[in-house]
Amino acid sequence: MQSIYGISMKDLESFFINNGYKKFKAKQVYDWLYKKRVKSFDSMYNISKEVISLLKNNFTFDDITILTKNEDVDVKKYLFNLSDNNKVEAVLMYHDYGNSLCISTQVGCNMGCKFCESGRLRKVRNLESYEMVLQILKIEEDINDRISHVVLMGIGEPFDNYDNVINFIDIVNDDNGISLGSRHITVSTCGIIPKIKEFTKYDKQVNLAISLHAPNNEIRDKIMNINKAYKIEDLIDALKEYIKVTNRRVTFEYIMLDNVNDSCECAIELSKLLKGINCYVNLIPYNETSHIEFKKSSKKKILDFYDVLKKNNINVTIRREFGSKVKAACGQLRANYEEGL
Ligand code: SAH
Image (tube, rainbow, N blue to C red):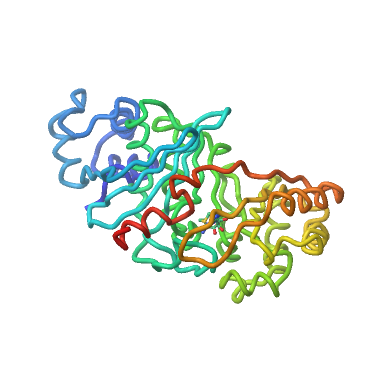
Protein backbone atom coordinates (compact mmCIF):
# COMPACT_ATOMS: atom_id res chain seq x y z
CA MET A 1 0.00 0.00 0.00
CA GLN A 2 1.05 3.54 -0.69
CA SER A 3 1.40 6.32 1.87
CA ILE A 4 -1.22 9.04 1.64
CA TYR A 5 1.60 11.60 1.99
CA GLY A 6 3.21 10.27 -1.18
CA ILE A 7 0.43 10.82 -3.70
CA SER A 8 0.22 13.89 -5.90
CA MET A 9 -3.03 15.81 -6.39
CA LYS A 10 -3.22 14.62 -10.01
CA ASP A 11 -2.87 10.96 -9.02
CA LEU A 12 -5.31 11.30 -6.13
CA GLU A 13 -7.86 12.85 -8.49
CA SER A 14 -7.43 9.92 -10.89
CA PHE A 15 -7.79 7.54 -7.96
CA PHE A 16 -11.17 9.03 -7.06
CA ILE A 17 -12.36 9.15 -10.66
CA ASN A 18 -11.35 5.50 -11.18
CA ASN A 19 -13.36 4.58 -8.12
CA GLY A 20 -16.48 6.39 -9.32
CA TYR A 21 -16.15 9.59 -7.30
CA LYS A 22 -15.80 13.24 -8.21
CA LYS A 23 -12.22 14.41 -8.40
CA PHE A 24 -13.02 17.20 -5.93
CA LYS A 25 -12.61 14.63 -3.14
CA ALA A 26 -8.86 14.84 -3.68
CA LYS A 27 -8.89 18.52 -2.71
CA GLN A 28 -10.79 17.69 0.47
CA VAL A 29 -8.21 15.07 1.43
CA TYR A 30 -5.33 17.46 0.72
CA ASP A 31 -7.04 20.08 2.83
CA TRP A 32 -7.19 17.71 5.82
CA LEU A 33 -3.63 16.52 5.35
CA TYR A 34 -1.80 19.73 4.63
CA LYS A 35 -3.95 22.63 5.82
CA LYS A 36 -5.61 21.10 8.89
CA ARG A 37 -2.79 18.59 9.41
CA VAL A 38 -4.89 15.73 10.83
CA LYS A 39 -3.13 12.46 11.56
CA SER A 40 -5.79 9.88 10.74
CA PHE A 41 -8.45 9.22 8.12
CA ASP A 42 -11.10 9.13 10.85
CA SER A 43 -10.47 12.80 11.64
CA MET A 44 -11.58 13.85 8.14
CA TYR A 45 -15.14 14.33 9.32
CA ASN A 46 -16.67 15.96 6.23
CA ILE A 47 -15.76 12.90 4.16
CA SER A 48 -18.27 10.04 4.02
CA LYS A 49 -17.64 6.75 5.85
CA GLU A 50 -17.66 4.94 2.52
CA VAL A 51 -14.86 7.13 1.14
CA ILE A 52 -12.88 6.89 4.37
CA SER A 53 -12.90 3.11 4.14
CA LEU A 54 -11.88 3.31 0.47
CA LEU A 55 -8.94 5.46 1.56
CA LYS A 56 -8.06 3.10 4.41
CA ASN A 57 -8.06 0.16 2.02
CA ASN A 58 -5.68 1.86 -0.37
CA PHE A 59 -3.42 4.14 1.65
CA THR A 60 -1.40 4.04 4.81
CA PHE A 61 -0.90 6.93 7.21
CA ASP A 62 2.86 6.62 7.64
CA ASP A 63 4.96 8.56 10.05
CA ILE A 64 8.60 9.34 10.68
CA THR A 65 9.85 10.37 14.11
CA ILE A 66 12.34 12.93 15.31
CA LEU A 67 15.13 11.01 17.03
CA THR A 68 17.42 13.86 18.04
CA LYS A 69 17.63 17.62 17.66
CA ASN A 70 20.80 19.73 17.80
CA GLU A 71 20.43 23.46 18.14
CA ASP A 72 22.62 26.46 17.49
CA VAL A 73 21.55 30.11 17.20
CA ASP A 74 20.75 30.10 13.52
CA VAL A 75 20.39 26.39 12.76
CA LYS A 76 18.59 23.33 14.01
CA LYS A 77 19.60 19.88 12.93
CA TYR A 78 17.20 16.94 13.06
CA LEU A 79 17.86 13.23 12.89
CA PHE A 80 14.81 11.22 11.81
CA ASN A 81 14.00 7.59 12.36
CA LEU A 82 12.17 6.01 9.41
CA SER A 83 9.68 3.17 9.76
CA ASP A 84 12.35 0.58 8.88
CA ASN A 85 14.73 2.15 11.44
CA ASN A 86 16.94 3.78 8.84
CA LYS A 87 18.03 7.29 9.76
CA VAL A 88 18.20 10.50 7.75
CA GLU A 89 18.80 14.11 8.65
CA ALA A 90 17.37 17.50 7.83
CA VAL A 91 18.80 20.92 8.65
CA LEU A 92 16.72 23.99 9.35
CA MET A 93 18.39 27.35 8.77
CA TYR A 94 16.95 30.66 9.90
CA HIS A 95 17.58 33.29 7.23
CA ASP A 96 16.35 36.86 7.14
CA TYR A 97 14.13 35.87 4.20
CA GLY A 98 12.55 32.93 6.02
CA ASN A 99 13.04 29.38 7.29
CA SER A 100 14.97 27.23 4.89
CA LEU A 101 15.01 23.47 5.24
CA CYS A 102 17.65 21.18 3.78
CA ILE A 103 16.19 17.70 3.36
CA SER A 104 17.58 14.25 2.55
CA THR A 105 16.57 12.27 -0.52
CA GLN A 106 18.28 8.92 0.14
CA VAL A 107 19.55 6.83 3.05
CA GLY A 108 23.29 7.20 2.38
CA CYS A 109 24.66 8.04 -1.05
CA ASN A 110 26.50 6.21 -3.82
CA MET A 111 28.13 9.18 -5.52
CA GLY A 112 31.32 8.77 -3.51
CA CYS A 113 32.46 12.41 -3.36
CA LYS A 114 35.72 12.21 -1.44
CA PHE A 115 35.06 15.15 0.91
CA CYS A 116 31.50 14.16 1.85
CA GLU A 117 30.44 12.29 4.94
CA SER A 118 27.18 10.96 3.44
CA GLY A 119 29.02 8.89 0.89
CA ARG A 120 31.17 7.10 3.45
CA LEU A 121 28.25 4.89 4.47
CA ARG A 122 26.99 4.24 0.90
CA LYS A 123 23.39 4.16 -0.21
CA VAL A 124 21.01 1.85 1.63
CA ARG A 125 17.90 2.86 -0.28
CA ASN A 126 16.03 5.73 -1.91
CA LEU A 127 13.61 7.75 0.17
CA GLU A 128 9.98 7.52 -0.84
CA SER A 129 8.27 10.82 -1.65
CA TYR A 130 6.23 10.65 1.55
CA GLU A 131 9.42 10.46 3.62
CA MET A 132 10.55 13.74 2.09
CA VAL A 133 7.13 15.36 2.59
CA LEU A 134 7.09 14.27 6.24
CA GLN A 135 10.48 15.88 6.93
CA ILE A 136 8.75 19.21 6.21
CA LEU A 137 5.55 18.45 8.14
CA LYS A 138 7.39 17.18 11.22
CA ILE A 139 9.67 20.19 11.44
CA GLU A 140 6.86 22.68 10.86
CA GLU A 141 5.05 20.99 13.73
CA ASP A 142 8.17 21.10 15.90
CA ILE A 143 8.84 24.82 15.39
CA ASN A 144 5.18 25.78 15.06
CA ASP A 145 6.04 27.87 12.02
CA ARG A 146 6.12 27.57 8.25
CA ILE A 147 9.09 26.51 6.18
CA SER A 148 9.46 28.99 3.35
CA HIS A 149 12.27 27.39 1.33
CA VAL A 150 13.32 23.81 0.74
CA VAL A 151 16.69 22.69 -0.63
CA LEU A 152 17.32 19.08 -1.61
CA MET A 153 20.89 19.10 -0.35
CA GLY A 154 20.81 16.71 2.57
CA ILE A 155 21.91 13.08 2.42
CA GLY A 156 21.66 11.55 -1.04
CA GLU A 157 21.75 12.45 -4.69
CA PRO A 158 18.29 13.73 -5.76
CA PHE A 159 18.84 12.80 -9.41
CA ASP A 160 19.67 9.23 -8.40
CA ASN A 161 16.09 9.13 -7.04
CA TYR A 162 14.55 11.22 -9.79
CA ASP A 163 10.93 10.03 -9.95
CA ASN A 164 10.36 10.19 -6.19
CA VAL A 165 11.94 13.65 -6.06
CA ILE A 166 9.75 15.01 -8.85
CA ASN A 167 6.65 13.47 -7.26
CA PHE A 168 7.68 15.08 -3.95
CA ILE A 169 8.00 18.49 -5.62
CA ASP A 170 4.58 18.07 -7.24
CA ILE A 171 3.05 17.27 -3.83
CA VAL A 172 4.57 20.11 -1.81
CA ASN A 173 4.13 22.67 -4.59
CA ASP A 174 0.40 22.02 -4.98
CA ASP A 175 -1.79 24.99 -4.05
CA ASN A 176 -4.22 22.76 -2.19
CA GLY A 177 -1.45 21.32 -0.04
CA ILE A 178 1.73 22.71 1.54
CA SER A 179 1.79 25.21 -1.32
CA LEU A 180 5.52 25.77 -1.36
CA GLY A 181 6.36 28.01 -4.32
CA SER A 182 8.44 26.30 -6.99
CA ARG A 183 10.91 29.20 -6.95
CA HIS A 184 11.45 28.43 -3.28
CA ILE A 185 12.57 24.87 -4.03
CA THR A 186 16.18 24.04 -5.03
CA VAL A 187 17.41 20.70 -6.29
CA SER A 188 21.14 20.10 -6.00
CA THR A 189 22.99 17.51 -8.07
CA CYS A 190 26.57 16.40 -8.46
CA GLY A 191 25.91 16.37 -12.22
CA ILE A 192 24.04 13.34 -13.56
CA ILE A 193 23.68 14.60 -17.12
CA PRO A 194 20.79 12.40 -18.41
CA LYS A 195 18.68 13.57 -15.47
CA ILE A 196 19.64 17.22 -16.02
CA LYS A 197 18.31 16.74 -19.56
CA GLU A 198 15.09 15.26 -18.21
CA PHE A 199 14.79 18.06 -15.66
CA THR A 200 15.14 20.59 -18.50
CA LYS A 201 11.72 19.40 -19.69
CA TYR A 202 10.09 19.60 -16.24
CA ASP A 203 7.47 22.32 -16.33
CA LYS A 204 8.01 23.84 -12.87
CA GLN A 205 10.24 26.81 -12.09
CA VAL A 206 12.36 24.92 -9.57
CA ASN A 207 15.95 26.10 -8.99
CA LEU A 208 18.84 23.92 -10.06
CA ALA A 209 22.16 23.88 -8.20
CA ILE A 210 25.23 22.01 -9.42
CA SER A 211 27.95 20.77 -7.11
CA LEU A 212 30.88 21.71 -9.32
CA HIS A 213 33.75 22.05 -6.82
CA ALA A 214 36.49 22.14 -9.47
CA PRO A 215 37.34 24.17 -12.59
CA ASN A 216 38.71 21.24 -14.62
CA ASN A 217 38.50 17.47 -15.07
CA GLU A 218 41.86 16.83 -13.48
CA ILE A 219 40.85 18.17 -10.07
CA ARG A 220 37.22 17.09 -10.33
CA ASP A 221 38.21 13.51 -11.15
CA LYS A 222 40.20 13.39 -7.92
CA ILE A 223 37.40 14.55 -5.63
CA MET A 224 34.16 13.48 -7.35
CA ASN A 225 33.65 10.01 -8.81
CA ILE A 226 30.73 11.24 -10.93
CA ASN A 227 33.22 13.16 -13.05
CA LYS A 228 34.59 9.87 -14.36
CA ALA A 229 31.20 9.21 -15.94
CA TYR A 230 30.25 12.76 -16.94
CA LYS A 231 33.00 15.20 -17.87
CA ILE A 232 32.91 18.91 -17.04
CA GLU A 233 32.58 20.09 -20.66
CA ASP A 234 29.56 17.81 -21.20
CA LEU A 235 28.06 18.99 -17.92
CA ILE A 236 28.46 22.63 -18.97
CA ASP A 237 26.90 21.87 -22.38
CA ALA A 238 23.87 20.24 -20.70
CA LEU A 239 23.51 23.27 -18.43
CA LYS A 240 23.74 25.73 -21.31
CA GLU A 241 20.86 23.86 -22.91
CA TYR A 242 18.94 23.88 -19.59
CA ILE A 243 19.40 27.66 -19.30
CA LYS A 244 18.39 28.21 -22.94
CA VAL A 245 15.19 26.18 -22.61
CA THR A 246 14.10 27.23 -19.11
CA ASN A 247 15.47 30.76 -19.08
CA ARG A 248 16.59 30.13 -15.53
CA ARG A 249 19.84 30.86 -13.75
CA VAL A 250 21.94 27.98 -12.46
CA THR A 251 23.78 28.00 -9.14
CA PHE A 252 27.23 26.45 -8.95
CA GLU A 253 28.30 25.26 -5.54
CA TYR A 254 32.04 25.32 -4.98
CA ILE A 255 33.40 23.96 -1.71
CA MET A 256 36.68 25.62 -0.80
CA LEU A 257 39.14 22.82 0.01
CA ASP A 258 42.57 23.84 1.23
CA ASN A 259 45.26 23.34 -1.43
CA VAL A 260 42.94 21.29 -3.61
CA ASN A 261 40.79 23.70 -5.60
CA ASP A 262 41.30 27.10 -3.97
CA SER A 263 44.22 28.68 -5.84
CA CYS A 264 44.02 31.89 -7.89
CA GLU A 265 44.75 29.79 -11.00
CA CYS A 266 41.66 27.72 -10.20
CA ALA A 267 39.64 30.93 -9.86
CA ILE A 268 40.86 32.15 -13.25
CA GLU A 269 40.09 28.81 -14.85
CA LEU A 270 36.63 28.76 -13.27
CA SER A 271 35.94 32.27 -14.55
CA LYS A 272 36.80 31.14 -18.08
CA LEU A 273 34.67 28.02 -17.77
CA LEU A 274 31.60 29.98 -16.66
CA LYS A 275 32.05 33.06 -18.83
CA GLY A 276 28.79 34.15 -20.44
CA ILE A 277 26.69 31.55 -18.60
CA ASN A 278 23.65 32.81 -16.70
CA CYS A 279 24.74 31.57 -13.30
CA TYR A 280 26.08 32.43 -9.93
CA VAL A 281 28.74 30.75 -7.87
CA ASN A 282 28.29 29.99 -4.20
CA LEU A 283 31.65 29.55 -2.47
CA ILE A 284 31.17 27.19 0.45
CA PRO A 285 33.60 27.11 3.38
CA TYR A 286 34.26 23.38 3.85
CA ASN A 287 32.69 21.90 6.95
CA GLU A 288 35.50 19.70 8.28
CA THR A 289 34.67 16.25 9.60
CA SER A 290 36.90 14.10 11.75
CA HIS A 291 36.94 11.14 9.34
CA ILE A 292 38.02 12.92 6.21
CA GLU A 293 41.43 14.44 5.57
CA PHE A 294 40.33 17.58 3.68
CA LYS A 295 40.77 20.92 5.39
CA LYS A 296 38.89 24.16 4.90
CA SER A 297 40.55 26.99 2.98
CA SER A 298 41.68 30.02 4.94
CA LYS A 299 39.45 33.12 4.98
CA LYS A 300 42.06 34.96 2.95
CA LYS A 301 42.14 32.35 0.22
CA ILE A 302 38.36 32.35 0.00
CA LEU A 303 38.32 36.16 -0.29
CA ASP A 304 41.08 36.13 -2.94
CA PHE A 305 39.17 33.51 -4.92
CA TYR A 306 36.03 35.62 -4.61
CA ASP A 307 37.88 38.71 -5.87
CA VAL A 308 39.15 36.94 -8.98
CA LEU A 309 35.64 35.79 -9.90
CA LYS A 310 34.23 39.27 -9.23
CA LYS A 311 36.87 40.90 -11.41
CA ASN A 312 35.91 38.52 -14.17
CA ASN A 313 32.25 39.51 -13.87
CA ILE A 314 31.06 36.21 -12.43
CA ASN A 315 28.21 36.57 -9.91
CA VAL A 316 29.55 35.15 -6.70
CA THR A 317 28.64 34.89 -3.01
CA ILE A 318 30.35 33.32 -0.03
CA ARG A 319 28.01 31.08 1.91
CA ARG A 320 27.46 32.04 5.49
CA GLU A 321 28.69 29.28 7.76
CA PHE A 322 25.93 27.40 9.48
CA GLY A 323 26.09 24.75 12.05
CA SER A 324 29.73 23.76 12.36
CA LYS A 325 29.01 23.30 16.06
CA VAL A 326 26.03 21.04 15.43
CA LYS A 327 27.69 18.72 12.94
CA ALA A 328 25.68 20.11 10.06
CA ALA A 329 27.93 18.80 7.31
CA CYS A 330 25.98 16.65 4.94
CA GLY A 331 25.60 13.19 6.49
CA GLN A 332 27.58 13.89 9.66
CA LEU A 333 24.80 13.35 12.16
CA ARG A 334 23.67 10.07 10.66
CA ALA A 335 27.24 8.79 10.34
CA ASN A 336 27.97 9.60 13.96
CA TYR A 337 24.76 7.96 15.11
CA GLU A 338 25.30 4.77 13.12
CA GLU A 339 28.85 4.54 14.44
CA GLY A 340 27.77 5.14 18.02
CA LEU A 341 29.62 8.44 18.46
N1 SAH B 1 24.15 14.99 -3.97
C1 SAH B 1 23.72 16.33 -4.14
C2 SAH B 1 23.04 16.94 -2.95
C3 SAH B 1 23.56 16.60 -1.59
S1 SAH B 1 25.13 17.27 -1.12
C4 SAH B 1 24.87 17.18 -4.62
O1 SAH B 1 25.96 16.67 -4.76
O2 SAH B 1 24.66 18.35 -4.91
C5 SAH B 1 24.80 18.97 -0.90
C6 SAH B 1 26.02 19.87 -1.01
O3 SAH B 1 26.82 19.78 0.17
C7 SAH B 1 26.91 19.50 -2.18
O4 SAH B 1 27.35 20.65 -2.84
C8 SAH B 1 28.03 18.80 -1.46
O5 SAH B 1 29.16 18.75 -2.26
C9 SAH B 1 28.15 19.65 -0.20
N2 SAH B 1 28.92 19.07 0.91
C10 SAH B 1 29.10 17.78 1.22
N3 SAH B 1 29.89 17.65 2.31
C11 SAH B 1 30.21 18.90 2.69
C12 SAH B 1 31.00 19.43 3.75
N4 SAH B 1 31.60 18.64 4.63
N5 SAH B 1 31.13 20.79 3.86
C13 SAH B 1 30.48 21.59 2.97
N6 SAH B 1 29.72 21.15 1.96
C14 SAH B 1 29.58 19.83 1.81
